[in-house]
Image (cartoon, rainbow, N blue to C red; front, side, top):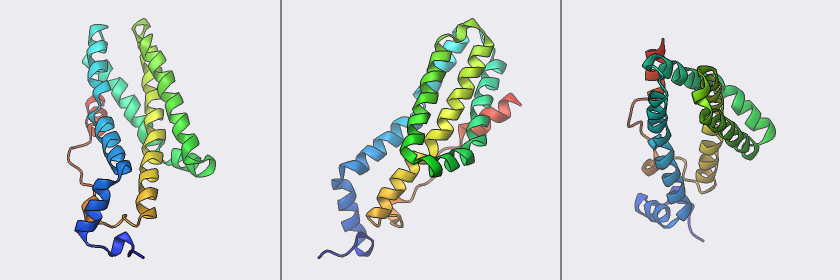
Length: 166
């Protein structure tokens, strides 16, 4: 019987990680989600519709303020109803927000609703996906491996958007 992964050398753990497709899927998901490609296109569309930088900052601030405000409540909901159900709810919030964004040219109120729902979607997404990854790492006894420690590589754009709008 092989020793648990936590007792193996870093090279053996690294080989396990490199050979496991789920780790690559986690990495690809994180990389694609953190690119935040949507926000660049949203900025261009809002500018095309005649929104001022102040309005765009207010929209971003609403979105990020709701994201922060609902981090803990979304965790309570995940504990009560399950992480998968919360993740499904996250995608519902995102889809509704995209529908409001589609009709955002109608007025600023529509964009505010879209930003608020997008913020809720982000709050409901941020916890469950990370906890699912951590549960997988714990299952394989990889939670404490030095090769998996996460480093903050860029400043959070949320703080800047909130400060800009205030």
